[in-house]
Amino acid sequence: MRADTTVSVRDLYMRYGTDDVLRGVGFEVRRGEIVCLLGPNGAGKTTTVEILEGFRERSAGDVKVLGADPSTAGEEWRARIGVVLQSWRDHGRWTPRMLLRHLGRYYAPYADPGRGRARDVDELIGMVGLDGRADRPIRLLSGGQRRRLDVAAGIVGRPELLFLDEPTAGLDPLARREFHDLVRRLVAEEATTILLTTHDLDEAAGLADRILVLAGGRIVADGVADDLVRRTIGVALVRWSRGGEHFARTTPDAAAFVRGLFARHGEEITDLDVRRPGLEDAYLALVRQHEEGAV
Ligand code: ADP
Image (cartoon, rainbow, N blue to C red; front, top):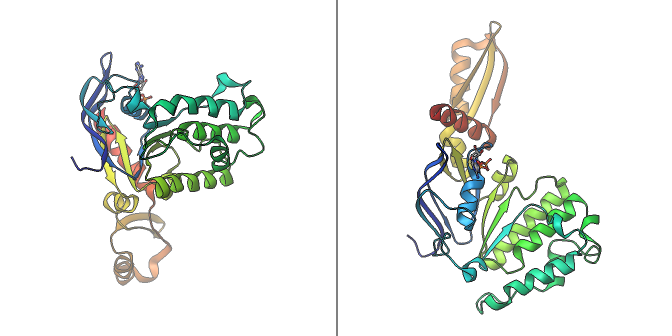
């Protein structure tokens, strides 16, 4: 294991009843990386993340998070990770300031001289853009404002590792962009490591340094978004029609392919379309391939 390994998962198995949901999951996350875990509904993303957070017992496998096994790690370890859960609905009568101050107290005994104490409440409110809303009841916040509060709650204790579960679901495009800026700032300024799940493939491609795809109980792809696309689909998707029939091919060299096509069929070609596939194309191809193989 490298010295900067923050998360290390090897041969992770999870069985619910007779259902093997995770069947040998393995991956690593290094310090300061933003890694996105993708997978269809029911693939086992939440299960995986909750095992890493220490909220769920695994069936088998080796898991190390910040150097400890989450199933036995104590409160000091927990104070070093941040978890952005779904909204704090039970605290509707509280204000954001009350909630964040309360959470800040929890971290006080675990203050790490290297990273500083729990974040100042005003600083936190400014970071997530909740100025002007800090002293109103949480139940009066809009969906997007609640999401920002969830994020603020996750970073009160200056976590070394932050888990984000579909952090931008329900946010409008501006709030989403501000959230992405906040995540990048956490990484740039504090070397926070981020593991997020999302169904938004543009978000994954734009934000993550590395993508993990979970399908059929295993990690079926692990890499930089552009590499995944190149390896899975090729560099370009060429579509054309000839004699009323439609054709589609992927190719590593669109220019050479199109030259060859015209050399062979010249004026018979109509509706030529050359497209660079994106992460969504690669993701769908991978999931189809591995979910089918798993049944
Ligand atoms: P994802 O987050 O990728 O949608 P989950 O980890 O929530 O996937 O679920 C993976 C599979 O495990 C699903 O089929 C789900 O029904 C099942 N599952 C999740 N939690 C439990 C549980 N506590 N008991 C039994 N089955 C579960």
